[in-house]
Amino acid sequence: MSKREEWLKKDGATFPGKTYVECLLKPVFNYQRDYLFSAMFQVHRAHVLMLCDRGILSKEEAARILDAIERVAALDPAVLRYDPRYEDLFFMMEARLTEEVGPDLAGNMHIARSRNDMGVTMYRLVLREQLLELLDVVMDLRESLLEVIGEHLETVMPAYTHTQPAQPTTLGHYLLAIQDVLGRDTKRVWAAFHTVNQSPMGAAAITTSGFDICRDSVRKYLGFEGIVENSYDAIAGADYLLEVAAAMMVLMTNVGRWIQDLLLFCTREFDAVKVADPYVQISSIMPQKRNPVSVEHSRSIASSAIADAQAVFAMVHNTPFGDIVDTEDDLQPHLYRSIDKALRVLKLMNAVVSTLEVNRERLMRRAREDYITITELADAMVRKKRTSFRIAHRIAGLVVKKAYQRRLELDEVSPELIEEASREVMGNGVPFTEEELKKIWDPNYFIAVRKCLGGPSPGEAARMLRDRRKKLSADRTELQQYKNRIRSAQDRMKERIQQLTATLSS
Image 1 (tube, rainbow, N blue to C red):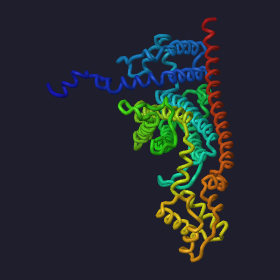
Image 2 (cartoon, one colour; image 1 turned 60 degrees about the vertical axis):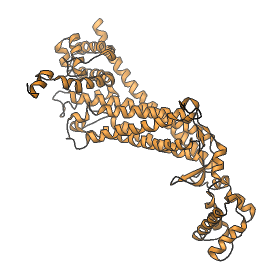
Image 3 (cartoon, rainbow, N blue to C red; image 1 turned 90 degrees about the vertical axis):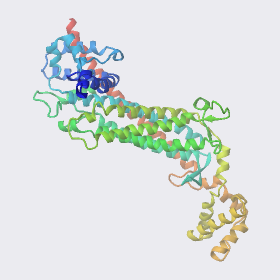
Image 4 (cartoon, rainbow, N blue to C red; image 1 turned 120 degrees about the vertical axis):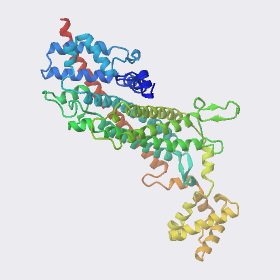
């Protein structure tokens, strides 16, 4: 028997072959069941109501179809299993509806629509809900960060550039920067949400329909904020998927960077923060070890979320501009997994950040080391001694070199050493008193004088904190408004269905 004959004997001679079923149809069915079941029936309801509103279906016909839709929608999708009689979940549910109302009415439910516009609408409905949940969780993390920031506006720590101690700042100032990035991530997710929250229904296969339909009616029933107007665009445009994927990549990349910082901060050597007990794991053989597994897992899951989002770009890239499977059942799970992983990371980090213990003394001690207040010496020479900045910078650099050679920390540097260095650079000594140097070497003073817009001084950081709390409150309000709009649309649709189906029992 030839190889071809062996395959045909094993797989069958007609579509779908056994291998096609096992490798494609079953996995696709399971994904549709798990993600699209509810959205499918939302689309059914809205479309039938529109057909009724336009007189394409009579009220009695619409009522009978809608009554059947509600009965079938009440099924528990978890019990559904792939059946080779049906290509996918859509055809299985259409068969169930046919059993309820007969082939004519079940078939008329499909007037003026296609699997194309219906599929894209389902994807958008699911993504819309996931993005709203993502926004909620991002805002939860921002809120927790703001709480911790308020506790640490005066917690001094070193700021780092090129991974080296650079200048003193505060933990509050550092965390404000992270919160601000998350604030911009919020805007990016909102932008993706607005792109997604548009109705493609009515585009049908790709050129709309010869029936007198009302696309705006379906839009309102489904709670979309707008319509993808051009019907070709409604089916062919995949940028709503790319925009979500891009927002996910940026969000997880941003979060991953400070997660890496956090892993460094909680090392024994660094000893800046301590992850709370519920989020660390004790080694199986080395009982002294508190492994920050929650942070480690968050780092790797964030990377995995980015990879899934990148897969979306890879699958859409260089594909035809039309109805293609590349943007459908094979692609969507990557996007859903990316969002799901991002949610896991954000929830974990919210728990970790909210319960973090900060070693204030250790951070202050590190802020007094490594000569990181030396910039203030150069600044003081310019402000008080009228030295040019470049000369002052050279003197400060020489002071550091001499202090390092003599194994001195800055708070041990004397006025005499300053004069020695300044004479070597410019020929005459720059006088400083012990009191002046004590202030210059103090990280608290360094921070306090940096009170211009966006600086780390406690007063300016407190102002930023108040502003960020207001912005978060506004974001929360906007999020709730969109949730309410969607809920109201669902309630109106439910009420309209009840009015129609009530006539069946009267």
